[in-house]
Length: 144
Length: 144
DNA sequence: ATGATACCCCAGTAAAATGGTAGGGATTAA
DNA sequence: TTAATCCCTACCATTTTACTGGGGTATCAT
Image 1 (tube, each protein chain N blue to C red):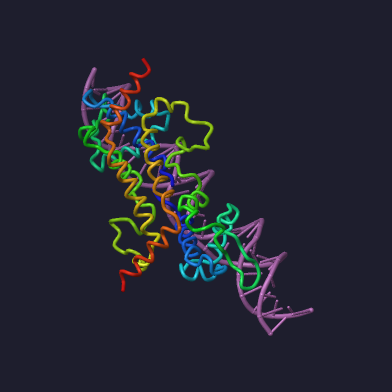
Image 2: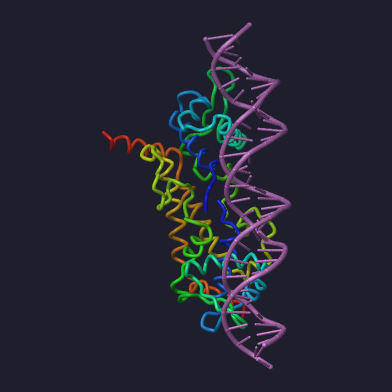
Protein backbone atom coordinates (compact mmCIF):
# COMPACT_ATOMS: atom_id res chain seq x y z
CA UNK A 1 0.00 0.00 0.00
CA UNK A 2 2.38 2.67 -1.16
CA UNK A 3 2.28 5.76 -3.20
CA UNK A 4 5.43 6.44 -5.19
CA UNK A 5 7.76 9.39 -4.92
CA UNK A 6 5.74 10.98 -7.70
CA UNK A 7 2.80 11.63 -5.46
CA UNK A 8 5.00 12.32 -2.49
CA UNK A 9 7.19 14.91 -4.21
CA UNK A 10 4.28 16.31 -6.17
CA UNK A 11 2.16 17.11 -3.13
CA UNK A 12 5.14 18.69 -1.43
CA UNK A 13 5.85 20.83 -4.49
CA UNK A 14 2.24 21.95 -4.72
CA UNK A 15 2.27 22.84 -1.05
CA UNK A 16 5.35 24.94 -1.72
CA UNK A 17 3.52 26.77 -4.51
CA UNK A 18 0.54 27.28 -2.23
CA UNK A 19 2.75 28.97 0.36
CA UNK A 20 3.85 31.46 -2.27
CA UNK A 21 0.44 31.92 -3.82
CA UNK A 22 -0.07 35.54 -4.85
CA UNK A 23 3.61 36.49 -4.75
CA UNK A 24 4.66 35.68 -8.30
CA UNK A 25 6.09 32.52 -9.85
CA UNK A 26 8.38 30.12 -8.00
CA UNK A 27 11.21 28.58 -9.99
CA UNK A 28 11.78 24.87 -10.31
CA UNK A 29 15.18 25.34 -8.73
CA UNK A 30 13.66 26.93 -5.66
CA UNK A 31 11.12 24.14 -5.21
CA UNK A 32 13.57 21.31 -5.83
CA UNK A 33 16.20 22.93 -3.64
CA UNK A 34 13.79 23.21 -0.78
CA UNK A 35 12.87 19.53 -1.12
CA UNK A 36 16.42 18.43 -1.78
CA UNK A 37 15.47 16.40 -4.83
CA UNK A 38 16.45 16.29 -8.49
CA UNK A 39 15.32 19.37 -10.41
CA UNK A 40 15.02 17.44 -13.61
CA UNK A 41 12.85 14.74 -12.15
CA UNK A 42 10.56 17.21 -10.44
CA UNK A 43 10.23 19.03 -13.74
CA UNK A 44 8.58 15.96 -15.23
CA UNK A 45 6.15 15.69 -12.37
CA UNK A 46 5.17 19.33 -12.61
CA UNK A 47 4.76 18.94 -16.38
CA UNK A 48 1.99 16.48 -15.62
CA UNK A 49 0.36 18.82 -13.15
CA UNK A 50 0.52 21.62 -15.69
CA UNK A 51 -1.08 19.51 -18.40
CA UNK A 52 -3.80 18.62 -15.93
CA UNK A 53 -4.46 22.31 -15.36
CA UNK A 54 -3.40 22.47 -11.73
CA UNK A 55 -0.41 24.77 -12.23
CA UNK A 56 0.49 27.45 -14.77
CA UNK A 57 3.97 28.26 -15.92
CA UNK A 58 5.74 31.51 -16.66
CA UNK A 59 8.57 31.08 -19.11
CA UNK A 60 11.77 33.05 -19.36
CA UNK A 61 13.98 34.64 -16.78
CA UNK A 62 12.30 35.29 -13.43
CA UNK A 63 9.76 32.73 -14.54
CA UNK A 64 8.53 29.71 -12.68
CA UNK A 65 5.31 28.06 -11.65
CA UNK A 66 2.17 29.28 -9.97
CA UNK A 67 -0.98 27.52 -8.88
CA UNK A 68 -3.67 27.69 -11.54
CA UNK A 69 -6.40 28.15 -8.92
CA UNK A 70 -6.87 29.23 -5.35
CA UNK A 71 -5.19 26.85 -2.85
CA UNK A 72 -8.60 26.25 -1.27
CA UNK A 73 -9.82 24.83 -4.59
CA UNK A 74 -7.04 22.28 -5.00
CA UNK A 75 -7.41 19.09 -3.02
CA UNK A 76 -4.61 16.64 -2.34
CA UNK A 77 -6.72 14.07 -4.16
CA UNK A 78 -6.55 16.14 -7.36
CA UNK A 79 -2.76 16.05 -7.24
CA UNK A 80 -2.47 12.38 -6.36
CA UNK A 81 -4.84 11.32 -9.13
CA UNK A 82 -2.78 13.17 -11.72
CA UNK A 83 0.55 11.75 -10.58
CA UNK A 84 -0.43 8.28 -9.43
CA UNK A 85 -3.41 7.48 -11.57
CA UNK A 86 -6.87 6.61 -10.27
CA UNK A 87 -7.17 5.85 -6.60
CA UNK A 88 -8.20 2.20 -6.66
CA UNK A 89 -6.53 -0.44 -4.49
CA UNK A 90 -7.46 -3.11 -7.03
CA UNK A 91 -8.41 -2.72 -10.68
CA UNK A 92 -11.99 -3.90 -10.32
CA UNK A 93 -13.05 -0.97 -8.12
CA UNK A 94 -11.80 1.61 -10.61
CA UNK A 95 -14.66 3.82 -11.74
CA UNK A 96 -13.46 4.46 -15.29
CA UNK A 97 -13.06 0.76 -15.77
CA UNK A 98 -15.52 -0.65 -18.27
CA UNK A 99 -14.72 -4.32 -17.99
CA UNK A 100 -15.61 -5.12 -14.41
CA UNK A 101 -14.62 -8.62 -13.54
CA UNK A 102 -17.35 -11.01 -14.53
CA UNK A 103 -17.60 -12.53 -11.12
CA UNK A 104 -17.90 -9.19 -9.34
CA UNK A 105 -21.37 -10.03 -8.08
CA UNK A 106 -19.96 -13.12 -6.41
CA UNK A 107 -16.80 -11.36 -5.39
CA UNK A 108 -17.18 -10.51 -1.74
CA UNK A 109 -13.64 -9.28 -1.44
CA UNK A 110 -14.51 -6.53 -3.90
CA UNK A 111 -16.61 -4.89 -1.20
CA UNK A 112 -13.56 -4.64 1.03
CA UNK A 113 -11.48 -2.84 -1.59
CA UNK A 114 -14.35 -0.55 -2.34
CA UNK A 115 -14.50 0.50 1.29
CA UNK A 116 -10.74 1.09 1.32
CA UNK A 117 -10.98 3.15 -1.83
CA UNK A 118 -13.80 5.29 -0.48
CA UNK A 119 -11.97 5.96 2.75
CA UNK A 120 -8.78 7.03 0.96
CA UNK A 121 -10.73 9.30 -1.35
CA UNK A 122 -12.61 10.81 1.56
CA UNK A 123 -9.36 11.79 3.22
CA UNK A 124 -7.55 13.04 0.13
CA UNK A 125 -10.51 15.00 -1.19
CA UNK A 126 -11.16 16.64 2.17
CA UNK A 127 -7.71 18.25 2.45
CA UNK A 128 -6.95 21.32 0.35
CA UNK A 129 -3.64 23.08 -0.08
CA UNK A 130 -5.12 25.97 1.88
CA UNK A 131 -5.79 23.57 4.77
CA UNK A 132 -2.16 22.53 4.70
CA UNK A 133 -1.02 26.15 4.79
CA UNK A 134 -3.23 26.81 7.79
CA UNK A 135 -1.82 23.74 9.50
CA UNK A 136 1.72 24.93 8.80
CA UNK A 137 1.02 28.32 10.33
CA UNK A 138 -0.39 26.68 13.41
CA UNK A 139 2.79 24.63 13.79
CA UNK A 140 4.88 27.76 13.46
CA UNK A 141 2.97 29.45 16.28
CA UNK A 142 3.46 26.47 18.55
CA UNK A 143 7.20 26.90 18.12
CA UNK A 144 7.16 30.43 19.49
CA UNK B 1 -2.41 3.66 -4.78
CA UNK B 2 -2.57 -0.01 -5.52
CA UNK B 3 -2.19 -3.23 -3.67
CA UNK B 4 -0.61 -6.01 -5.67
CA UNK B 5 -2.14 -9.31 -6.64
CA UNK B 6 -0.50 -10.76 -3.54
CA UNK B 7 -2.89 -9.01 -1.23
CA UNK B 8 -5.76 -9.41 -3.65
CA UNK B 9 -5.34 -13.17 -4.14
CA UNK B 10 -4.39 -13.69 -0.52
CA UNK B 11 -7.54 -12.14 0.91
CA UNK B 12 -9.65 -14.12 -1.52
CA UNK B 13 -7.90 -17.33 -0.55
CA UNK B 14 -8.35 -16.64 3.14
CA UNK B 15 -12.03 -15.92 2.56
CA UNK B 16 -12.28 -19.28 0.85
CA UNK B 17 -10.72 -20.95 3.87
CA UNK B 18 -13.11 -19.09 6.14
CA UNK B 19 -16.07 -20.43 4.22
CA UNK B 20 -14.86 -23.95 4.89
CA UNK B 21 -13.83 -23.33 8.48
CA UNK B 22 -14.62 -26.36 10.63
CA UNK B 23 -14.97 -28.80 7.73
CA UNK B 24 -11.40 -30.03 7.36
CA UNK B 25 -8.52 -28.81 5.19
CA UNK B 26 -8.98 -27.26 1.77
CA UNK B 27 -6.39 -28.13 -0.86
CA UNK B 28 -4.37 -25.58 -2.77
CA UNK B 29 -5.87 -26.92 -5.97
CA UNK B 30 -9.38 -26.27 -4.74
CA UNK B 31 -8.60 -22.70 -3.72
CA UNK B 32 -6.66 -21.84 -6.86
CA UNK B 33 -9.24 -23.48 -9.07
CA UNK B 34 -12.01 -21.46 -7.53
CA UNK B 35 -10.05 -18.25 -8.10
CA UNK B 36 -8.79 -19.28 -11.52
CA UNK B 37 -5.19 -18.42 -10.72
CA UNK B 38 -1.84 -20.21 -10.71
CA UNK B 39 -1.60 -22.89 -8.04
CA UNK B 40 2.13 -22.49 -7.76
CA UNK B 41 1.98 -18.76 -7.24
CA UNK B 42 -0.77 -18.99 -4.67
CA UNK B 43 1.27 -21.60 -2.84
CA UNK B 44 3.97 -19.01 -2.23
CA UNK B 45 1.50 -16.51 -0.88
CA UNK B 46 -0.03 -19.03 1.47
CA UNK B 47 3.46 -20.02 2.62
CA UNK B 48 3.83 -16.48 3.88
CA UNK B 49 0.50 -16.62 5.65
CA UNK B 50 1.46 -19.90 7.26
CA UNK B 51 4.78 -18.54 8.51
CA UNK B 52 2.89 -15.61 9.94
CA UNK B 53 0.66 -17.99 11.83
CA UNK B 54 -2.59 -17.19 10.07
CA UNK B 55 -3.09 -20.60 8.47
CA UNK B 56 -2.05 -24.14 9.34
CA UNK B 57 -1.24 -26.84 6.85
CA UNK B 58 -2.01 -30.56 6.79
CA UNK B 59 0.48 -32.49 4.71
CA UNK B 60 -0.10 -35.67 2.76
CA UNK B 61 -3.06 -36.99 0.85
CA UNK B 62 -6.38 -35.39 1.75
CA UNK B 63 -4.33 -32.56 3.20
CA UNK B 64 -4.62 -28.85 2.62
CA UNK B 65 -4.90 -25.64 4.56
CA UNK B 66 -7.09 -24.47 7.41
CA UNK B 67 -7.36 -21.18 9.23
CA UNK B 68 -5.20 -21.12 12.33
CA UNK B 69 -7.85 -19.19 14.30
CA UNK B 70 -11.52 -18.40 14.24
CA UNK B 71 -12.57 -16.32 11.20
CA UNK B 72 -13.82 -13.64 13.59
CA UNK B 73 -10.28 -13.24 14.92
CA UNK B 74 -8.62 -12.69 11.55
CA UNK B 75 -8.92 -9.20 10.13
CA UNK B 76 -8.26 -8.30 6.52
CA UNK B 77 -5.55 -5.99 7.82
CA UNK B 78 -3.66 -8.98 9.26
CA UNK B 79 -3.59 -10.63 5.86
CA UNK B 80 -2.64 -7.50 3.93
CA UNK B 81 0.19 -6.65 6.29
CA UNK B 82 1.72 -10.10 5.84
CA UNK B 83 1.51 -10.07 2.05
CA UNK B 84 2.06 -6.42 1.25
CA UNK B 85 4.20 -5.25 4.13
CA UNK B 86 3.33 -2.44 6.50
CA UNK B 87 0.42 -0.25 5.52
CA UNK B 88 2.14 3.08 5.00
CA UNK B 89 1.52 5.24 1.93
CA UNK B 90 4.97 6.77 2.35
CA UNK B 91 7.97 5.47 4.25
CA UNK B 92 8.06 8.23 6.86
CA UNK B 93 4.72 7.27 8.40
CA UNK B 94 5.77 3.66 8.93
CA UNK B 95 5.61 2.80 12.63
CA UNK B 96 8.49 0.32 12.67
CA UNK B 97 10.65 2.87 10.97
CA UNK B 98 13.44 4.14 13.19
CA UNK B 99 14.92 6.79 10.95
CA UNK B 100 12.11 9.25 10.53
CA UNK B 101 13.02 11.92 8.04
CA UNK B 102 14.91 14.67 9.78
CA UNK B 103 12.60 17.35 8.57
CA UNK B 104 9.46 15.59 9.72
CA UNK B 105 8.62 18.37 12.14
CA UNK B 106 8.62 20.80 9.22
CA UNK B 107 7.01 18.31 6.91
CA UNK B 108 3.39 19.26 6.70
CA UNK B 109 2.66 16.76 3.97
CA UNK B 110 3.51 14.02 6.45
CA UNK B 111 0.27 14.77 8.28
CA UNK B 112 -1.68 14.02 5.13
CA UNK B 113 -0.13 10.59 4.65
CA UNK B 114 -0.65 9.82 8.28
CA UNK B 115 -4.35 10.51 7.93
CA UNK B 116 -4.50 8.30 4.84
CA UNK B 117 -2.69 5.53 6.64
CA UNK B 118 -5.00 5.70 9.64
CA UNK B 119 -8.11 5.60 7.49
CA UNK B 120 -6.89 2.56 5.55
CA UNK B 121 -5.98 0.76 8.74
CA UNK B 122 -9.34 1.60 10.29
CA UNK B 123 -11.12 -0.05 7.39
CA UNK B 124 -8.90 -3.10 7.06
CA UNK B 125 -8.77 -3.79 10.78
CA UNK B 126 -12.51 -3.45 11.16
CA UNK B 127 -13.38 -6.23 8.70
CA UNK B 128 -12.91 -9.85 9.77
CA UNK B 129 -13.21 -12.95 7.65
CA UNK B 130 -16.36 -13.78 9.62
CA UNK B 131 -17.82 -10.43 8.54
CA UNK B 132 -17.15 -11.32 4.95
CA UNK B 133 -18.85 -14.68 5.34
CA UNK B 134 -21.91 -12.98 6.80
CA UNK B 135 -21.93 -10.54 3.92
CA UNK B 136 -21.72 -13.41 1.45
CA UNK B 137 -24.68 -15.16 3.03
CA UNK B 138 -26.70 -11.98 2.86
CA UNK B 139 -25.96 -11.69 -0.86
CA UNK B 140 -27.05 -15.28 -1.39
CA UNK B 141 -30.40 -14.62 0.26
CA UNK B 142 -30.99 -11.58 -1.91
CA UNK B 143 -30.67 -13.82 -4.94
CA UNK B 144 -33.53 -16.05 -3.88
C1' DA C 1 5.22 -51.51 0.74
C1' DT C 2 3.70 -48.40 -2.72
C1' DG C 3 1.64 -45.12 -5.33
C1' DA C 4 -1.23 -41.08 -5.42
C1' DT C 5 -2.11 -36.91 -3.25
C1' DA C 6 -0.75 -33.26 -1.10
C1' DC C 7 2.37 -29.62 0.98
C1' DC C 8 7.49 -27.56 1.12
C1' DC C 9 11.21 -24.94 -0.73
C1' DC C 10 14.65 -22.70 -3.58
C1' DA C 11 15.77 -20.78 -7.92
C1' DG C 12 15.11 -18.40 -12.21
C1' DT C 13 12.86 -14.96 -15.23
C1' DA C 14 10.13 -11.81 -18.51
C1' DA C 15 7.75 -7.66 -18.24
C1' DA C 16 6.53 -3.54 -16.07
C1' DA C 17 7.17 0.22 -12.91
C1' DT C 18 10.22 3.29 -10.48
C1' DG C 19 13.28 6.90 -10.12
C1' DG C 20 15.87 8.93 -12.18
C1' DT C 21 19.74 11.19 -16.09
C1' DA C 22 21.07 13.49 -20.55
C1' DG C 23 20.79 16.91 -23.66
C1' DG C 24 18.94 19.96 -26.55
C1' DG C 25 15.26 23.68 -27.78
C1' DA C 26 12.16 27.73 -26.94
C1' DT C 27 11.00 31.92 -24.38
C1' DT C 28 11.61 36.14 -21.98
C1' DA C 29 13.43 39.73 -18.49
C1' DA C 30 17.14 42.68 -17.88
C1' DT D 1 22.31 39.74 -26.33
C1' DT D 2 22.66 36.86 -22.65
C1' DA D 3 21.42 34.59 -18.70
C1' DA D 4 17.61 32.53 -16.51
C1' DT D 5 13.90 29.78 -17.09
C1' DC D 6 10.57 26.44 -18.77
C1' DC D 7 9.72 22.58 -22.51
C1' DC D 8 10.34 18.09 -24.58
C1' DT D 9 12.00 13.60 -26.04
C1' DA D 10 14.92 10.03 -25.13
C1' DC D 11 17.39 6.73 -22.54
C1' DC D 12 18.70 3.80 -18.58
C1' DA D 13 19.70 1.16 -14.17
C1' DT D 14 17.36 -0.95 -10.57
C1' DT D 15 13.58 -2.91 -8.27
C1' DT D 16 9.22 -5.06 -8.07
C1' DT D 17 5.77 -8.00 -9.85
C1' DA D 18 3.85 -12.07 -11.12
C1' DC D 19 4.79 -15.71 -12.24
C1' DT D 20 7.17 -20.74 -13.90
C1' DG D 21 10.22 -24.90 -12.98
C1' DG D 22 11.69 -28.59 -10.67
C1' DG D 23 12.75 -31.29 -7.04
C1' DG D 24 11.86 -32.87 -2.11
C1' DT D 25 8.94 -34.59 1.80
C1' DA D 26 4.90 -36.20 4.41
C1' DT D 27 0.65 -38.90 4.63
C1' DC D 28 -3.28 -41.67 3.37
C1' DA D 29 -5.55 -45.50 1.05
C1' DT D 30 -4.87 -49.89 -0.69
